[in-house]
Length: 454
Image (tube, rainbow, N blue to C red; front, top):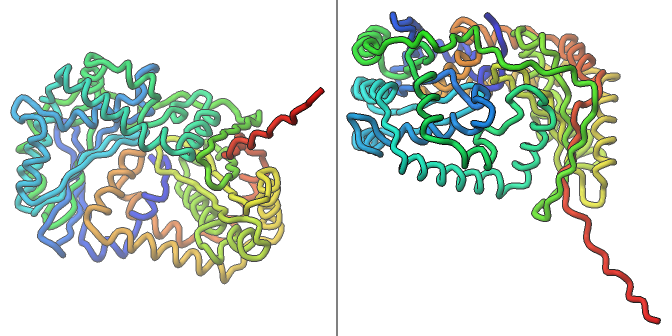
């Protein structure tokens, strides 16, 4: 069933890339593990990725950050491998490995010589079910994650502002909590909570293996059946279709977020516009939203915002639109405007909304649209010019509700979208008020009280 599609998916839906790298095939083992193979014989290497349908938006209340913390602990050893031995073995075989967590998935990947694929599957299958959690290592990793949060979020005014904006936008859906977790909840995570999370989600019927590189489907199937095949499915693990999160109520009240931080170099305003929930299930609508974003802000010189705000009127240092549908559930459409020094954030709000109003009246120049559409499609094709990129793109698609066929059809769909469709989408989107408007700014300078003498 179609769910949605985003930039990463868009990067993947590239028939030309498919022609260059060979056929894509997929199969499912008896225990429910889905396996996708992308043949790419240009290099004697292979990228092996395993994706679990478990991310930050699947966490229980009060356990924020547990998906990401377990990702760290997956490198700390099993009953067969010592802590750190997984990555040491990959490196000793000339490869590299890493992992990442999102709201909707957690993924682990290795890139190695093609003849080491069996070893990668052996080690990944081992830690799928035989991870050993040790209290001292859990405490250490909690400290590591808290330090990571300090560097990536607490040390960045922009990251803290975005965290508050997201929390203000989502009043019921778990996308409102940060992937890394709130600091006070990370501290309270226990080894028992981690074991429960691992026991529920890390099973073959909750995972997808993507292999891209110098392999054949027959080779991959034989290795997958040997290493992953003996692991039983977990009947208590939800399947893809049952991943239903709490829905958002109607966005019928404007919220304002004012975040002040003395470290802010250039203040800016951000606006979050709700996207119709029903569009999450429509492939063409998602592609149209992506093209609208591209028309508004993809180019530093020719996009609508750059031309009007930065070049012609010279009132902005930077202006952009953002839309990401690489999520299982809907995200808002975001406008951002960073005014030139001396121009207020209230003026910046009016400036960008004024450009949107003019855009809705004047429409899109067909020649400019053709150029943007061509450049956007070309960038998607070039982004797929390596096996690791293809594996990541496919894994993102499959863990957010799409099929391999959807992935292959993406470019054809985007190429057929017209300016009329983009304008109709824009009018529907901007006919409503923003749900959240935020100001990221510096505190006002303190004024010295005038000394009064008798």
